[in-house]
Image 1 (spheres, rainbow, N blue to C red):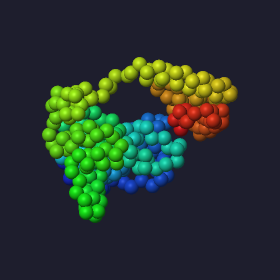
Image 2: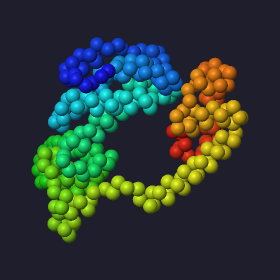
Image 3: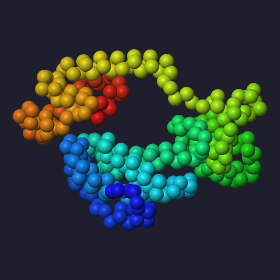
Image 4: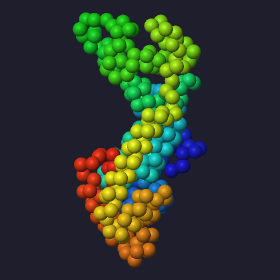
Length: 292
């Protein structure tokens, strides 16, 4: 579904008129896109679930972003979900897509809320989208006890509730109030003149992370090599072509090369993954995404 040139009302009407997919049709379309890169199947899948994307986008209108922009971001999340969806996992596409749509919208809202971007870690996202709700609940609970919380007490309680540093709560208050901090402003009188710019996250990879990653990857490669050694030549070939190539081959193309049906190649692939899972049992959960 093309999004350019349409109002949010028009997009909503078009989405509501789209077909409803049953589980069998959805699965067939997902396989057609994953295995054959069938763009018509992808279009049907995206179009059918745009109503879901639009419904989720509407929940973020209170953050002040244009509805049409929110729908655009929701659509991007939906397309990412379709591209990464694995029908072999046995879950409905809508269940999988919800997380991608929500993440795409939240990233957009965070990027465009303030001129000064102060970070978008998972904890900051949680604080941004939950702070008002948590604050309202804490105020109700305090009122029920006959108490009145001052700003410092409220910030402390929110910090504990959400699990973020106190200075993140103070910064987020400014963002939610619609004002931008100067990055050269000091955080508080207790921080000995420390400026907000000093608290910005360094997005470059740290040396400790590089060493740890290289070590983990070395262990992972040894586990996978051991698991691959338990496969026969044809199974190894299928796994390599399906999972280790930059552009994975389709079941149909492998079937043509091996003189087998597409379904037989799928069965051999599943059997090979089963052997590898058995070999990797008790090793680490880190390899499961490879075989998912």
